[in-house]
Length: 482
Image (cartoon, rainbow, N blue to C red; front, side):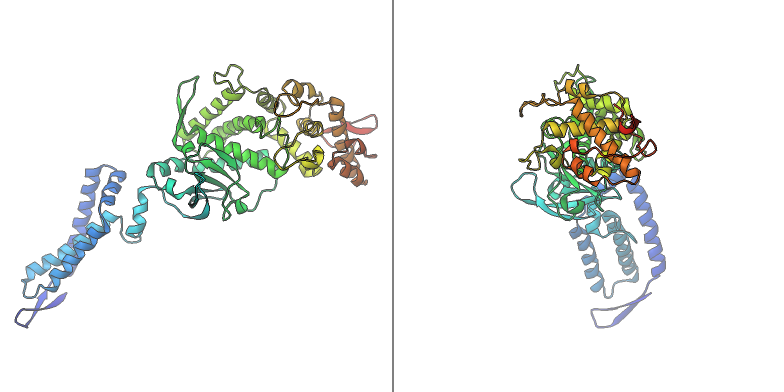
């Protein structure tokens, strides 16, 4: 390469420089510098720390000084010019290394985000968990099953970002397992887990409209649930992120249950005390720990420990924390006795997939407001369909009564569930399915069943061949097994 400079007396001084050799030499020294840096720092994290300490201003200053030197280097001996060019090449190499910028890599601004897990998009604005104002939520994870949105202020703390990132595969596993339990059509969108600044709270749904099917297919979780540890009072072991495992699965169960129908019995299913989701927390956590191959071994151990702790909290009568709930223990007993996820899924399919029930209509509660639904009729319907799903030939009504259905919740007036009415509801389902399977009309009876008028819902016709598997053909009619 030939470079021309003006000398102080106006003459042009032509300097010949072997630029190719200089650049090769600079590149060789740059590689050596990289090796030295790795040996010195010992880890990529340490290198990132050094990179973070080099500001863009410092990098720019190096190049400006070089430009000035070269501009006024007229008459400078060729050896010094060569040195300046060598130093320019080497400084470019050095600043590229310091900022994480090489060919096909990100810009210095983007590289700064490498200090912690990256945000990959924007989830929009929604109320801050603090309740004082709206906040910006960053999309920090996206897969086929889930999206994770985090309050930007909380995510920008590196320790918080790292803690939440550990849960990404777990979030996916939660949704996969929910779909095993609940045979319901889900929105054509990923489930969104929304993480707020610390509030100590979690709930189904979220305030974001850009994700989670417009804010309906999502849940909201306090950020400190992922960063804090909880000590098992029995084993005395710390479970890192216990609440971060529990709340996402718990609130997703509530949401999936609501997708099938609103208005579940608030006195013994969910809301007032939530025994059903508390029981399903245990079995979903167990299943995820055993079956989710995408989870790292340490995460699996924490999930299994969380399942055990949740079991102790609500289903172990010796629970030292005083949370034991007979209804949680009942749901877990039924899960173990009658076929696990498939048994509950069958019950849900019969009620909602086949008979297309909606609990607010069944309950006959005229004051139902979307959140508080309880009555004898409602509870008896739910129990009838559970028994159909379980395939039991023994009436389980005494078990539900002993667990406190109708009497445990002190927020409402007590009521009595009746086994004869429960059997009649199941018989209505069996007669309608048998008649329809035989090609007979039973629309009037089905409408009566859907309206909670089960006494008018017994259909005529059908045969042993048209009687569904959850029922039995006896005395020339399709009827309940129990």
